[in-house]
Image 1 (spheres, rainbow, N blue to C red):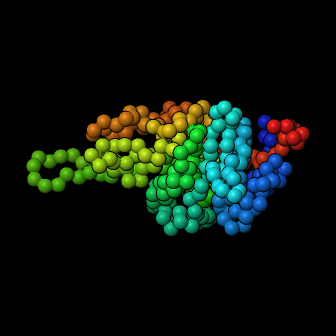
Image 2 (image 1 turned 30 degrees about the vertical axis):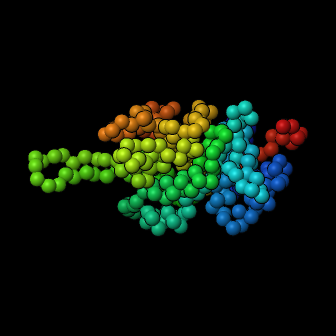
Length: 294
């Protein structure tokens, strides 16, 4: 059932979003419709994520339009005015790979009980690394939106996922050998970090600077849960304020000096937040678009 939103749009399910996106393309961007239909047939998870992110950006009045050249490739969407565009590239964490990594099934059973599971930081980092290679040198702020369609995506794509994707999964350092006893401590090795690595001299340096920010999007039948992290030293900084109320994680003490541990803070909310949930709002052609205005 589709319900009307207060803003004049309509809320529906993810399937409604996919259909609405296809209809929007058929009127406004016919050159992109065939490629989307092909993705929907060959890689439905990727196509559904593309439609969901388009609908979310549109509901935030960020004016997304396809930016990919059907013959040459490129990022998925360009948002905002031409004077200050934001590029958005959508990718996915494959649900089958997530099931294998975490041990969590795609669907929550009626008799589901408490269980242990693993995070997917390495999978998320791999998606970011692959997209960084594809993006090249951006001319505008560029967001990589990593999506997961999975019943447990609120656990796997939340604030903990954002923190570990920023710094890598923490490890416990235990001193060994002779000498006075020392306390164990939590350390960061940066192996799964999307934005940092150790330089040959042992210092911490930034990497993948062509990604201004990452959005983690957990997709369910009725909504998308979104949380973000900002690159501390991007080639083109992102103005994240238009994305309110999506929380973005930042490194407060960048650049790091020798021995420093990253100090993580949240922008917009100032506490460790949950992802923001957006009900699916299928794209609908506005009167301006129906008139053919640009």
